[in-house]
Amino acid sequence: MLQRLIVRRFKSLAKADIVLGGLNLLIGTNASGKSNLLDALRVLQGVGYGFTVSEIFDGRPKGATSVAWEGIRGGSSEALFQPLENKQGKQSRAVYEDCSFSLTLTLDGRSFRYVIRLEPATGRVYQERLLLDGRDVYASTDAGVSTPVLYARVYTGRPGRPAARPYERHRPLLHQLRQDSNISEDIQDMLQDFSTALSNQQPLYLEPTVLRQYSQARRANRMGEHGENFAALVQGLLGKASTRAAYEGWLRELTPREIDSVVIKKGALSEPLFAVREGEREFPAPVLSDGTLRFAALTAALLQPDLPGLLLLEEIENGIHPTRLRLLVELLDNRTTSGELQVLATTHSPLLLAWLKPDHYATTFHCARDASGRSVIQSLTQLPDFQRVVRRQPLGDLFAEGWFESLL
Image (cartoon, rainbow, N blue to C red; front, side, top):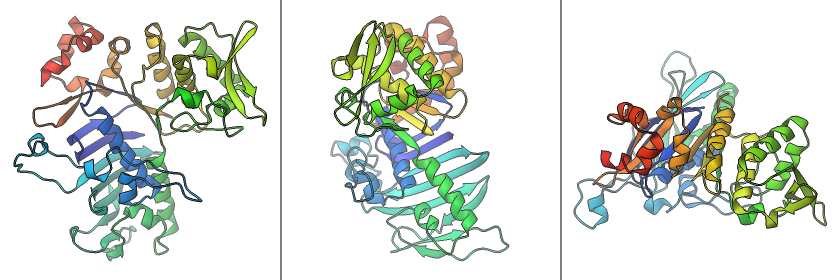
């Protein structure tokens, strides 16, 4: 589980430092920095996949043995934080060349701390370090970014200081050390575990046009970012009595339609298509509303066999009837309580916030831009006077009436 994330000099995030839990929500006006925080996590996902720095920011085409990577919104040219006065063409005292990402992650009882500094414009790693349970696994030397290679020391636990070895500067050390035959198998296995945990994120940008299509696969343990193979995933859920009951039960509760059951229609080549049954009638995906499809896909993602470590969702309330938002909060809470799944979602819904419990306040983060263009991201429990005010007025009302915007 991702416990803490620190981002510096990335997009509007001059510095963001957040401590996460199972269910995490980002609130705030448009252009306040919510999506930029999700982009920061995408940078770290690219690191876990072993992409070069340029590929992480600017994307890579689909290859014979690899999928396409869309890169970060705006690419490398828009990756660095710029003070507002610099964006307006005025003289700025600070022009940054690198951004940094630091995280603390727990995995199978082990605590990892990872730090990486990157130069997006040149596509180079500036510094990188990984610690396990407080002890160095590897660290780059302080040679600066001007050297053509990046020197790093790998700590084996033996007495003495290990020699620094040269590595490519355009790709994170994490990937290179995993493939270095000079590194012990135990360390390589540990680095592989950490890389997998880092990349095991699932951003969901569900598109109803994709959800209405036949799945290309017959079975899927995880659907794609836009809902690819949604019907194939549901087909697998329906194949087991326990997951069928859970899936159909949540759908009956959370959609305004009177759904009796979920069925899978078959195409000419037996490719699956999502459908619901109401009484004697069946309604295939192409005739269902956007909201019904989005929630059906979201529920499937929360029950999929191949759960990601971190599920990223934007505007989670989209297409969901306001009377069902309480149940949506219950579903998210239910699926994240065990620690098997972690969710980070954005929302603009006062009604959804109204159903949060006080236990959720520490992992609900308010995002706002100050006069210099910096995004300030704070847990609700860090906001001045929040605890006193929320006892007098419901959280949803405070959000709807603009109380949070008055803080900056």
